[in-house]
Every structure is written in C-alpha cells, then in structure tokens.
Length: 297
Length: 253
Image (cartoon, rainbow over all chains, first blue to last red; front, side, top):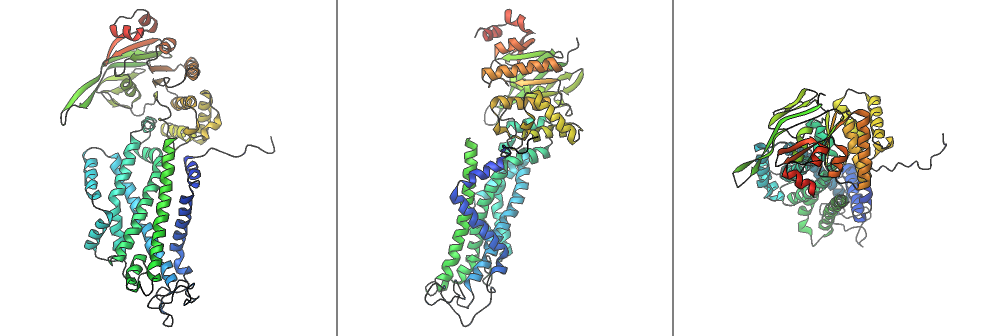
C-alpha cells in the first residue's frame, strides 16, 4: 500500500462545480455577488449593527450633513434628517425592509411558481392550455401596474405590498418554469429514464430538476430585482410602506421636500437602491452567461 | 426452436395535422410480424421514413401500438397498446447516446436508479452489480463517479450499453446506435456486442441502414417500406437474391 498518493485530487467536477468555476471568472458578477451577500447580511442583522434606534430623535442635531463635511458630526456618519434621526441607522434598517422583504417575496414566488409551473408542465391537453393562455393575458400587464391594481384591492401597507408583488411576479415565473419543464420533457434522456422504470415523481425530481435548477436561480434573480424596484416604487408612491417605516422608497418620498436643504437624505437611499438592483442584476447576468457558455460547449 | 421475441400484426397510426383544423391519419406501421430466437440477431432495414424508428420505440415500450401483440417467451407483454409496465426484458439503446444520458447525474447514480426502480437489491448488491456491469462493457469501476460530459462518444456508447445490460435483459434494441461512431470505435463496439451475445445469449434487434454491418451481425433481416414488411428472411438469402424492388434498390447503392 502506497503511503501517499500523488494524484489524490478528485477532479470529477459535478455540473454545479463547473458552474461555479465559470462564474468565478466573471469578475463583475463576483463583485455583484459580494455586494449582494453584504446586503443579505445587513438585512438579517441591521437592528443589532445600527448605532441608534430607527426612530430615536436627537433634538440637538437636526439636519446635520455627513461627517466628512465641515458641518458634519462624527456621531452621525451619514448625517441626520429633519427630525434629528440618524440616517445611517435608518438606511441600515431599510435593508431589512427593501432588500429582505424582496428576497422573501422572490423566494415565496419561487416556491409557488415552481410548484404550479411543474404541474403546468406535466399536465397536458385542455388544463395545460387553459393555464397557459390565462398566464399569457396577465403577462401583457407590466408587473408594477399589476401590483398597483392588487394594492388598490388589498389596500396600502407593507405586507399587502409583498403579497401584491408575489401575485404580480407569479405569472411570469410560472410561464418560465413551465417552458423549461416542457423543453426538458421532450429530451431523449427523459424517455430513456422512463424506460428505466422511473415514475412521474422520479422524472421530475431526479430527471428534470437537477438540470434546471440553475435556470430557476437565474429566474429568481430577475424576480428579485423586479421585487426590489417594485417594493421601493410602491413605498415611494405611498402605496406600500408608510413613513415611519424605514423602507428606502418610503425614506426617499419622506425626504423629497428636503432635497435642496439636505440632499444626502434623498441621495443615499437612492444610491443604496441602485446598488441593490445593480448587484442583483450583475449576479443574474453572470449566471445567465455561464448557462449560455455551458449550452455552447 | 421456440422464438424468444415474437411480433404479431403490429400497427401504428399517427394523426398528422393536414390543415388548420383537419387531421389526417398516417399509417406508419401496417401489420408487422416477425420473430427472433434466443441468441440471434435481426436487422430491420429500410429507407428513411419507412417506420424503422417507430418500430424500435414500440418494441422498447417508449410508445404504444394501436393493434397487434408483442410476445416475449410466449408471454404477451403488449396487446393492442396496453403494455406490461413491469417488463424490462427489452431494453433500447438510443441513436444519440449523449442525449439519452441525464447530464446532471453521474453514471453510477444513473445505473443505481435503474436498479432501484426494478430490483429489490440492497446497497452492496447494487454496488456489485454496477461494478460488474461496467467492467463487462469495458469501462473501469471508477467511471461510475463520472458525469456524461466527461466521456468520449465511444465511451458514451459503452455507458448506454451498460445501462441497457444492467437489468439483465433478453432483447436489446439498437436504434441506429452504431451509426454515429467512427469506424474503429464501431468495430470495437460491434465486437463487444458479439462477445456479449456469445457469453449471455442476448438477442439483438438492429435498426440501421448500414448494410455491411447487417451482413456481419444479423441472422435475419426485415426490409420495411412505407410501414410494410416487403421482405423477411435469412440475411444471406435476402442479400444474394433480393425479391422486391425496394430491397434491390437498397442493396445496389
């Protein structure tokens, strides 16, 4: 028995490992992933990390500019708003609402969408075409408009916004999943798998799913960036989160009157929104490129 | 000698869209009958569109016939489109073996699934069976950790063969399975097929348009034209003395 093995490295790269290796080479996407993870961490731990309470008012420090300005105060790194609340703490907590709730909304959409989409994919005949054409109709309405219509029925509020976004994103999601499943079902290996004696459940779980979950992740990132934009747009329009809530869109709307007096109160939530959507899109785009490269080889 | 596989009056019709709402019936296979003995090979040849691949699908159970029966050792396994789903004695090897393997599973997982769905083997028995089957087709036991994209075309064909063999079938249907290979690898696979036939008494049903291969391997030959059997007999007889025009045309080119 040899004491050491020169060729000990196992190089049987699974499709997932190959996927990651290609993704790593796309640097913008990797930066996007880091920003994305930072936002996720912030969304989970913001109340613990934030230096002040969200609604803690400092009556001695109204409209203080960010600390790098001459008038700034180092206690409030990103300054304060007109009620003397620390902008940094509010923005950090905003991640929980804007980013965290978007992730929750996109995740719920994914779960429901995958279930319904799978069902639509494997059903045939009248049921399938009915569902398909019903979804086609809803696809023609932009998701934000659809969300506003649903808000009009449910009434404004943060949780209603989440439901509205889920309902608005679902049609597109189900449609994509259904198309993926139908595409895979027509491939040779599914026929071969069925001849091996696989049941419908096996075909879905062992046959199709291992080959489409990357696609599902890509659709998830697209749904997520739409969800972030929608949640903040509805907050900005005062249909979603209501003012004391630190949702970024709501902060933007609240401070819009101060834009000349204290531009930082408007610019900073805007920058954060931009970064959140950008990082999500970079990750999504990176994933899509890897998928495309994999199809080519 | 009692034939192993017997096909009786198999017919298949497809509905083809003719216009916007009208549909036309298109008979792909009409009254196909033939039989093969144990350890023999039969080749099915014919022009493109003569229903060869449909016949392969019907035999392997990927599709069901409209009428007629398929008998295996005198047991009816398919009668008028109703198939005995438990039967895995007829296995098929696809034209494109790369496309017939799940890209997301390793070879070992795929073979393991096969055994799990069809046998009552426990873990160690399955491991042993997989190892034995892989070495039977000339692959290494370690290949079971490999994904399909890591194999060359010839190796993929062996993997497809291992998948067909692992359930100890009696009949293997080869649907143009050798056409995509280059000559040297084809020769390897053909020798492997013949060796396995000698060792285990497998029966092959070959769907092909490769005539020299037919002559080399098969004992009987069925010539299909537009879904009908135009000629059926021992290979040498048919090749020496073709009766129908279709066969003459096929052989002359």
